[in-house]
Length: 508
Image 1 (cartoon, rainbow, N blue to C red):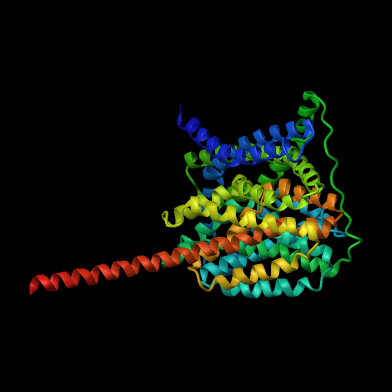
Image 2: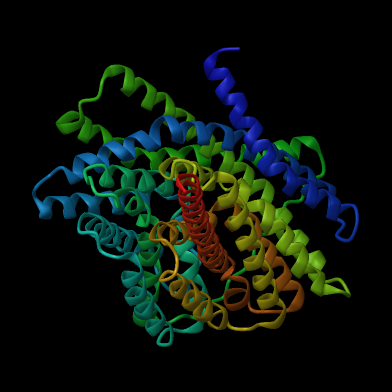
């Protein structure tokens, strides 16, 4: 087995471990409390295989292409002595990679009464502006907690002036737009930006870009809510597929595949052009490195096409149908613990989560392990899905969850090491990716239909909840880490005193 084959096999085994628990839970539910139509189940299983194959190629491609591209562009941008040029290039880069995000097209169609192009350009401009702000924060060592307090005060001040139909979708937008295309590149940019700094806090400040870039879309949609008046905010679910044989099963995916092939090509193209412009004028990487990046981009492309096809065509109908069936049961509250269980495992299948966990482990030299990060993210998402299901069943406004949640998260930032705050707020945007949008959101929508709730105000907001709870759980990990570190220092000090006493006795 060659080196490339062994890497692919390793990535496939990782994706298998990430996706199979979700498949197992769905199959168990299908054969027990939530019977599902055979066609939808087969569609889900084929979708699961495509998701696993897509994760395998995407994670390998991110390592080979997206990460080195982002790091080198980040270093190149920050080497410029012209602050204005740095700001302009950062804005353009943030704007371009946000438009490249596939989930942004979906979000644009969900906001009531606002033209899709207006949403896309407003959100992209928001990310671009906040990428500039994040870069200046790193260059001038500005504390992240202070910036977060100011920004979230502005966010929650605007919330009370926009119609309710904009609120959940606005907070969803912060998670949706930091997806598998954006996150690896932005996080690598952070490493590149910090590379020119020599102080001891440089590696800590390499995180936090995703955190600030997630605020841009929220503010953009809220500002649009002040300008546009919703026309009722009606939203209808897509019809469930009616699959009766294997040919129809194949056609369900074959019809959609060309669309994803074209969509991902259009998404990757601006990033590729941006990189090669830098290569011509500044980077001048070796042919061997360019070949590696080109192969990595091909893997990324194939991976995203397979992943999105599997998630959208296979996972979305299954999530919708399960939500409808389970919320229609006599004991409908069972959807809360079941939702938490699905949330615990499904975050492991988010492509960008792998990138985050690996980068955290590398930057901290193993002090924050990928396994501990994964566990905290899983616990956070489990809590968020449980709360989202409670919202669906009761109709409690999302603000009653978001305001105390973000208040706790920002409050914790003053008591944990700064790197944990940056990682925590990054993880919120990373955890709320395409798996959340294609399984958990339809799951909530299906449940909302069964209980007779409002889809726009009650079902939407799942992504926002998933983006919020990791901010708390990761920082709690920081509290534990800080306590263990102080205890270790105390133990070492006691040992030194004991050694001194022993030496004194010997001298006597």
